[in-house]
Length: 449
Image (cartoon, rainbow, N blue to C red):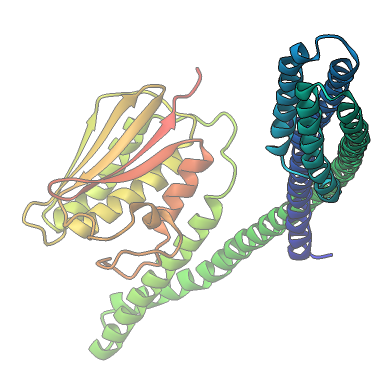
């Protein structure tokens, strides 16, 4: 499977993990809402309804007892307030029950209860009227009718209690079922999430290993290609330089011969200059290839001494363009680098500076050597035109990169060579604008004595 497809599968796996946990959370919340609604219905409807209906039935029986005592006992007129009080208590319990919502099964039952309660009120009025008139026979007849109606009311109240009890039991069953379904869903989603997470982790580990393997292969290929390029550049430089040197010697000999025709000497001069340029290009390629090599073990040099020697060699060239080349050595510290490598780095920087101060109003190049913590820092400052606007200073140290106002016919390998040598010796380098001109610098670690 390709890395791109593995990445897509990994993203899908993580998305599935997130989806599993989201679904588990949503289902759990839904079950929780169902349980809360069912529990609230039991608490605020079924349980109070059962209590009010049971109280109403108890008050109904108490009312019957008071009526019997009033009809059968002595001083029946004294029972009237008690009967009226009992009827008021019964009405209070019924009124409290009527304020609660009815379940579907209660509607028909309550219709019958209301009809029976209405007849109960009429029977009770007949009993009280007969008792007040001391008509025992009429009172007993009204009592018998009241007893029959009371039984009908009691049955309706009991049926209401049963209906609410059944509704509460059904809600309790729903709570249990919702809890079980919620737990089952949670367990299933958690298990799916864990399995998907394990799968995603394994896939991520596989992708990581494959990425690491691919990077290692690319690194090996890059190193192999770099080695091949270095070997090719070195071989080509040697193979080309030798015949070019022979050709230049021959052309120089023609130029020195007094009997040679002027036209031939001019042609030989052009050929000699072309060979000089070609030789310079070949030397740049060779130096660039060699700059990738590891530093020589135990190599030590003094940047100030190398700067003095280089200035002595390049000062005649500076005088040809009317430039001043100066070395300011504030440090004589030594660095872990060979004198040849230091000379290559400084030669590139000073050579560039000479190209750019040519034609400037002020033509001065200053090489400064100073301590910089645990390093020795070398700066080459010039009074040339400076860095062009919009140029990335870091790009100047890349191979084959030249600025928009670059002078000469180089390949853009000089600063790249400087960068490779400095970095190979664990050093630092950079470029800074100056007024006028610019400053190229590099710093190398001090040598351990």
